[in-house]
Image (cartoon, rainbow, N blue to C red; front, side):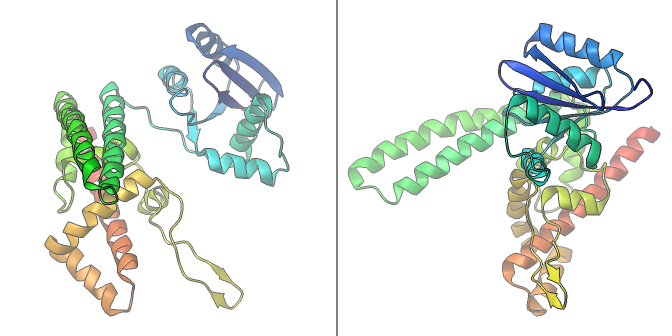
Length: 313
C-alpha cells in the first residue's frame, strides 16, 4: 500500500471530522477544532501520496478544514452533496452515518472525476461572505415586499418600517464590498475586466467573482456546465427530446439572468443574437438563457486572457 495513491473522504460536522482513507480502509475521527485539524494534517502529510481529499459543503463548517488543507498544498476538492448522495444510492448504500459518509466521499474520489478547488485569498473569502450576506438581506426584503401586496393598510406601515430597516444594512454591506475590492488589486483588476461587458455591473461582477472562482480557468464547455447554462440532451432512440438546463450554481445563474436583460437592450451583438433566436421560433426564456451562456463564455475568455497577461508581466 505504500506506493498507492490515497483517496481521503472527510465528513465534517460542527463537532467532529470523520475520515476514511482508501484503499487502506482506514477510519479515523478527530474533533473539529484546531487540535483535531492539526492531527488530521499530520496524518495526511505522512500518508503519501494523497491523490484527492474529498469533502462536502456543510454550511461553513468545512471552511477552516479546507483552508488548512490548502495551506499545506494538499489536493482538496469540495464537491456537490447531491452528487455524492446520488452516487451512494447508485452504489447501494442507503444507510447514512458519519463513518459511511466518509467512506462514500473517499469512494467518490476514487471512481469519479473531481477537480481541485481553487485556493481563495483572504480578500476573496471576505468578498464571498459579503455577497452571501447581501443575498440574504435582499431575499428578506423581497419577502417583505411580497407581503406588502397582501396585507391590510394597518399593517403596511409596519412592513414599510421593516423594509427601511433592511435597506441600511444592505447599503453598508455593498459599501464594504467596494472597500474589499479596492484593497485587493487582483480583485479590482478582475472587476474592471468584467465591467467591460454591457449588462455587467459592480454587484454582478462581485457575485461572479465570489460564486465562480473558476472563471477564466476552465474551457467554455466546462464553465457553462458548472453554472448550469449548458443545454442537456434528452434523446432516446428516434426520440429527440427538448434540450433543457439543470443544476449548476443558482446564485451565479440568477445574476447572469439579470445582467442579460440590459445586455439584450444595449449591446448590439447580444441584441442581434437574441432576435435571431426569436426569429427561429425559440421561446423568450430559451433565447435569454442562450444570451447568458454567450456572455459567460465571453467573460471566461476575457478573464483567461487577463490571467495570461498578468502571468507574462
